[in-house]
Image 1 (cartoon, rainbow, N blue to C red):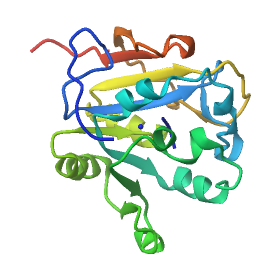
Image 2 (image 1 turned 90 degrees about the vertical axis):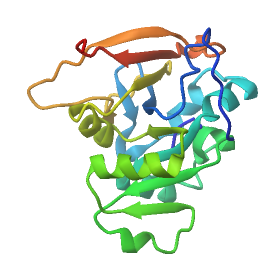
Image 3 (image 1 turned 120 degrees about the horizontal axis):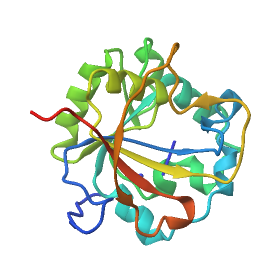
Length: 208
C-alpha cells in the first residue's frame, strides 16, 4: 500500500488540504517512473526521505476510502514478512478507513474482514466508494485503476512523491500503448514533504 485517521483539514494555504469528497490518486515514484518494483516489490520505499508523523497524519486525515487492485493486494499479503513499517500498512498505520479491492474473484477475499472485495467496473467502484466515504476523499492506489478513472475523467487530484532510486522494471505510474497525453496543473508543494518532492496536481479541464 502507500502512505494514508479521520477528520478534515481545509487550510486554503496548504495545497495538500483539499475540500473533502475528492477522488485522488496518490503514489511515490522512482526516478525512472515506476511505482512498484518487479513482482510488486515495495521495499525501495524505505529509501524515501522520512516525513514527520504530523505530516503523514495530515495527508491521511481526509481519506475515507482507498481503492486498490488485486495484484497489489496479493503482493502485500505475499510479502508481508518483508515489508517495513512504512509499507506494511497504508500511511504507515496512520490511516483508518475502508479499503476496496477490485477483483474478478471477490469470494477469495471473504476471509479478510479488513477489505471489501468487489467485482465491478471502475466507475461503479468509485460511486460506491464515494457513498462509503460519506464526504471524505476516495484515494486510488493502483496504476491500472487510476488509468481507467482518468479515461472516465473521474480523478480530481494527483498527489505524487519522488524516491531517490531507479528500479529499471516494475509497474509504470502511467502506461498507455501508443501514448496518451493528460495535462496537469500544479497546485503546489506538500508542506513537510519537500525532501520527497511532494506535489499536488489537478487535471486541466476545459472551461464550462
